[in-house]
Image (cartoon, rainbow, N blue to C red; front, side):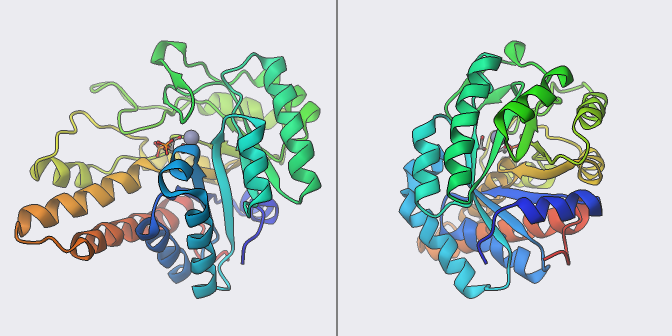
Length: 311
Ligand code: G3H
Ligand code: 13P
Ligand code: ZN
């Protein structure tokens, strides 16, 4: 059933696991994710960015999620807006079937972030919808905001109590060294998230659900398949899964994964074309992409997030 993340996060926090938040853009991705979650009896968050809503039309995405719920009526699913840039897009999602929205005013000055987040919280809560906000900026590309690596800044733990207290937000995304996309760390350097910052945040906000964006691990097996079949992804590096496991055991209740699904979909399609250049039926290559999405989500749920059997 379609739910908010409130209970999901409470259980995940206490149980030392995290809920996967996977980005949806088309039918095959919705199917791959929800099949895996249903098989493993795992709660799941399906999130649509503004780019996804523009690509597919938000009506299609909402209806695809409704279809998945009809097929898996017992599966707890949150439909979440990823990186909402303003009040209007959040309102539109609240009014049209989403159970959770993110207002991302993290690139704005602290006080403006508070004001805008507060406004979204007031509207969303009045309609039974929960809100995620962000403090600190991730390097890389966010939907509406491009952030240069040198401008990225970790979350300041001294800000979090005031921010959560003033806004009434339900969960908080923090910046501890992750970034969006497939190129998260310089080649040759050791990828390391700032768990010391996370610990400081948790001291200030005991029991409060924390969100990790940019949490793809960029599985090298899929990068290799892409590059072996005409792709050119040089030095693609993600967050080591051990660090994601450590995050999942902590106050991090929501872990965002998009790039890994993109890699899986692309690897499946590229390999199918190269293996059999005579193929031109979209079902033949999309189903391979969909299977990879399924396999990646199943692996995350079982081996990284620990949310299997928690539905
Ligand atoms: O925030 C980044 C997510 O991967 C969504 O990306 O805005 O290109 O859909 P997108
Ligand atoms: P990745 O690019 O690491 O998959 O991050 C996705 C994300 O944070 C969506 O909001
Ligand atoms: Zn994100």
